[in-house]
Image (cartoon, rainbow, N blue to C red; front, top):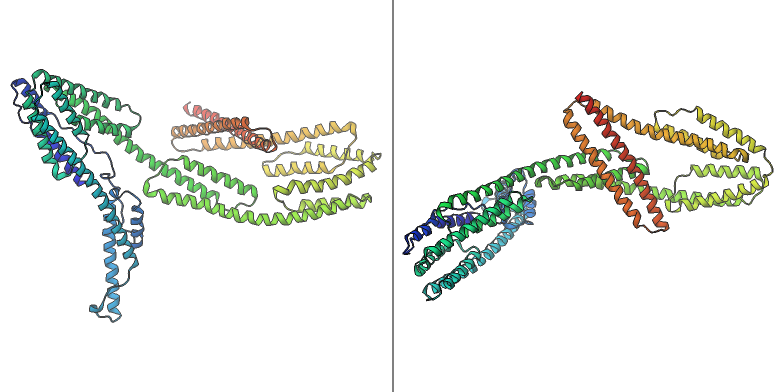
Length: 631
């Protein structure tokens, strides 16, 4: 960094050196040429590169030697030119701590009765490892500096070659002034294209270059018209640079604009003088555009810093939500899956949030990931135990299938029916099995039961007295359903409805002429229950939202705006998901597997539509509340 600053200072000082007065017959031409020294020097704003990037300030004072070693190892993954100050800070802190460790070891040696002249130190693996990494850093830095110096040496030789070409051109006799001037311009372009040279050679190199330039103008005794043409060309080039700089003011990418500005600044510096009366005006135009771009860059970094802080707060909120979700272990498979789905959504949301301040990135990610990893470890253990239970349940159900299949062959209707019903009761008491075999074993058991009851029904097909009794039972259930009132507890309501369904299923056939009427009335009651349950859940959600808005005590306007934006974003996301799922459905061919996927997509789409309806309802509630507030 110090070398680069010194180099820039030399170049700028070289620019400020007055050009030796040209030995040209035309006095006005002499005046124009010497005005080049009076042009304001273009301020060089150095782009943040690996060699001169400002390093972040890190406080290592609270670290132990082991932590300093770990921090140094981590820094070694970066470009060695980016870490010089931090390596120095780590090394200074480690040296201080290491001296204290050595002092304590020496004092311990003396305390144990040792002679200070016999003390040879102790084996310190931490210090050995640390200074080994330091040596590696020095080697890498030395290698990079040597490579850069080699490039500068090659540039030096190239520029010396160009000086030789200038000398040859000055000594050459040419009948064509244009040809000589074209050769001169070509030499200048080659000079500008070459990069940096060693610092100690820079001043002499530039002095020789300008001296030969002066010789060239003295030699050809350029006319006033040609010099005016040169000044005009320089003016046109600088006006073009001004226009390009002004275009960069509206460039959407701040970093692209700044990088391009640096290139324009370098080009400006290489272009020669312009007519004196337009010199200050042209420079001010370019400088004003450059200042605006610099201000945009500063504002960009300020805004970027604020965004990083906001992202940090957002991710901390996600960590709190993840901790809340995993505070207690789920008690059922559905709760496990719901928690997993919620954590997956948090993870997707985490990925959608931008970066946080670099020094906190790893810590906050490890905290969030640790919570999710623990959930999956607990879930793996839980489902492992559940699989063992499902295997045991499967074996129990297979045993019941064997018993049911044996009963299905019997014709002692009463005893067989009682035994089969007892088997059905036992079946219900057995827990769940694997989804892969659940339907298969159930169909086997159900087939045995159906076989028996079909044979029994055939036997008793002429006996209709039971049908009248069944009709009375089902009418009683319908009447009970009419009298039943849904309560506030949704789970209790669902349990009651399921009880009605179970009892209805246990009752046998009714007379055929009454079947459709009774079933239609029963279905109507069930549909009414389910519709009311859905409406109740929706109304409860809306009432909770109204209460939330009503009880808010902060900045109402800010709250409404934030809440409105959040609801609209969620609606937009759900609509986007709907569109994606609808497109996916169009690509699915007709097959058993595809039908399962279609059913799953339809389920997701139905849930999304219901969620959109609820969110739109909340928007209306928010709008109504805002109107009342304005009144």
